[in-house]
Image 1: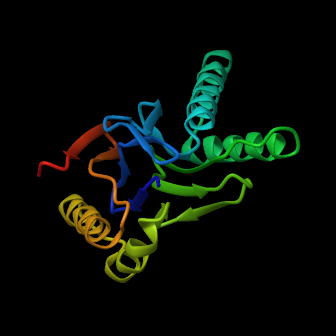
Image 2 (image 1 turned 90 degrees about the horizontal axis):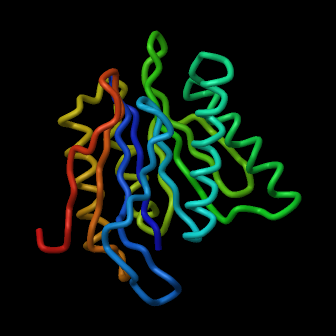
Length: 197
């Protein structure tokens, strides 16, 4: 039921998720933040079982911060994505986490980057990425409209088109969404959408 989408623009990464928490066929709440900041320039967008999603994201955040404290240096987005992938691969042989995610970040000197990773520890660097039933309707549109010089305004318009497409075509479409951006200034929320809009 989760919906996650991300795109890499000219000098930013934009990520969107639904904010609905569900358990099987029951909606629990509509203000769940599935976009978690690892640090001021790295963000995880997570989908999957609520317990695994929260536990894994907190585990990754705590260990990245521990690395920063021990080594007096921050992990870049690529290093964070590879660390995360390694932890998923290790857990796969013991007790797998049922979570798929997007890793978005901005590194000085390297610019924005977006990674897609699934519960089987498969990871790819992407320009556009998504997971969940809603992404089936949106990925082809993003693929057609994305270009490497995409401005922030164009990226937001693309995200809103994707949300409209999901609301129109998906039977179990979530009613509320959150869009965040990561750029040289850090991570911030740029738009929240609820069913009343």
